Structure formats: C-alpha cells, structure tokens
Amino acid sequence: MPTSLKNIQTKDLISIGLLVFVPIAIVAQKLDWDALIVFGLSAFAIIPLAIWLSKATEEIAVVLGPSIGGLLNAVFGNATELIIGLVALKEGLVDIVKASITGTIISNLLLVMGLSMLLGGLRYKEQTFQPMAARVNGSTMTLAVTAIVLPAMVITTSNVVEQSAITNLSIFVAVILIIVYGFTLLFSLKTHSYLYDVGVVELEDNVSEDEVTEQDKHSKPNLNLWVGVLLVATIGIAFVSEIFVGAVEEATKGLGLTPLFTGVILLPLVGGAAEYVTAVRVAIKNNMDLSVSVAMGSSLLVALLVAPILVLVGQVIGQPMDLNFNLFEVVAVIIAVVIANLISLDGRSNWLEGMLLLATYAVLGAAFYFHPV
Image 1 (cartoon, one colour):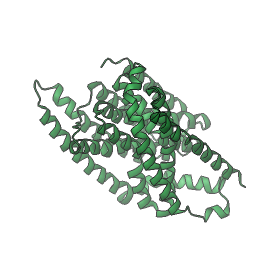
Image 2: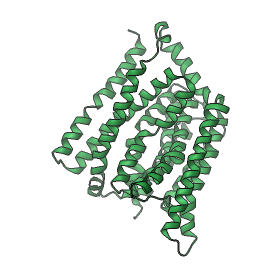
Image 3: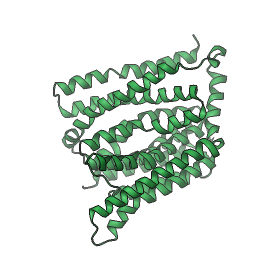
Image 4: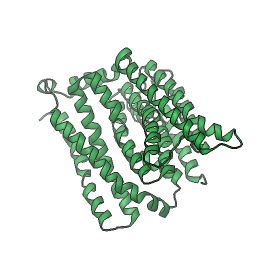
C-alpha cells in the first residue's frame, strides 16, 4: 500500500475515532449530566462531523466538475456555522448568534490565515499566492463589512431609532448582500474562474506527482457514497447542534463567560474546524492560493450569505434578528478586514505575517473576554 494512502487512512481514522463523541454527547444529554460536560462533549462531536461534511463536499466536487463542484463548495462551505446559527436562533439566543457571525469572520481572517501563514512559513521561507483573487475577495469583504456596520452607525448617530426601522434596514441589507453573493459566484465560477483555479490546479499537480499512484489518478470517488456521507454529516450536525446549543448558555455562565465572548470566540472554534484543517493542510503543502481562498472565501460566505439568511429566517420563525451589532464587534471586524487586506495585498506571505495575524487575534480575544456586557 502506498505511503500516501496510509497517511490518508490515518487522518480518516482519527476523524472516525472522534465520532465516538456523538453517542457519548447524546447519552450525556439524556442522563442530564452537568451542562459544562454536555457542552464539551457536543463540541467535540461536532468537529469530526464538520470535517466529514467538508471532505464529502470536496469528493463530490471532484466527480461533478469544477463549476458544480465550486457551487457546492460555496453553498456547503459554512454549513456547520449556518446549522449551529439556525438552531441557536430557534432557541432565542439572538445575541450569541450575532456574535458568532462577527466571530467567524474575525477567526477566518486572523486565526485561520495566521495559522496557515505561520506553519507554511516555517516550512518555506516565503510563499506566494494570486494577489488579484485576494484583492477581489478583500474588496467584496469591505462592502460586506460596510453593510454590517450601517445599522450600528444609524443607532449611534441618531437620538431615537425605532426597532422597526432597524429591522427593515437589516432586511433590506440582507437581500442586497445575498444578491451580491450571487454575483460573486458568477464572477468566481464563470466569468473570472481562471483567477480561482490556480490553487486547485497546483494542489492537484502536487498530489499527482508526490502522492498518487497511476491507478489512483484514473479512479474517481464514489458519488453515491459521498452524497450519503454528506447527508449523514449534515443531519448529524443538526442533531448534535441541538444538544450543543441547549447546554451553551448554562455552561458558559458556569465558566463566567459572557454571551459576547462565547459567540465571538468559542462558537467559531467549533463550527470552523473543517476550514482550519483544510487551510493549514494545504499551506503546509505550499499551496497558499487555496489556503488564502479558504480563509477569505469562508469569511465572505458568512458575511454575504449566512448572516442574511439568519436575518430573514429569524423574521419568519418569530425570533427577530437584525444587523445591529455591538459597536465593539464592528470595530473588531473592521480591524480584521483591514489587516488581512494589507497583508494579502502583495501576494506573498511568511511566518512573521502569520504571527502578526495570530497576535492580533489574541489581543482581540482578550478584549472580548474582558469586555463588560
């Protein structure tokens, strides 16, 4: 058996092994164990499910081709965050849901990209990536942040603002953001797809030269198998998320954590596990194009699709959610976007830039921890 296949199987076995937390979390919830234990077990249960959901999406994309595959990745890229957000919204945890949106954007731009640049930079003195794609993502991200900032600025700069006005503004902005997301898909998958093919092509070249045998080159993933894995992983995440969200409030109160810190720091660490693994793995393989694309693309997906969907669904299910974010959250997101844009401008990265991104994330995390709510 080729060494590469052994490595792949080892990684898969680790993911399979972690699935043991799923039944344990269910038992813990049924037996009314301490909320903190249920919270921890369900968090560990979501991580392997998220990794398998991501892996299934990638395998299906290989079979269906770049266009449909890219669309599938765009839709399911942040499925875990969306599912957790919908479950939390249904339970009325609006503050935590809003905080998780800003937290996911911040963690992808600073933590994921920082880890990728640091670990990739420790192995390679300097790494390069397509600056044009990074600039396009950065410009779109700036628009999304502007839209997210507006409701908070309306309230801050006005003496009296009725809640209905903020709700209507949030719905209007949500619709605009979804339309913009549709155009970004058209741009990245159709009219300017060549800008986004570089990372994938390089990864395929590296795999074919170093890791795949002649027999493996011509074999395609089993579509039915991976569609089944995708469905099971999605259902599993939805089910375990119910347990996770049910324990999150009591558990974090027991730890002395605020809803703001929980949403901004803890939830993205659980929901974004798949992005972290993918981005860091390809960065270590010297494919910063794909790594930066995963980090920035995931942030875009949250800002342009996940947040608007949560706003619209909230109105439908009677859990009104708007885009009126805490002003400190808005400032933190602006800082993350500005720094990520500045570092990705030249299309080059090294370990020090990764360290700077991680340091910024650590400082913001500490600020959220000590922020009184």
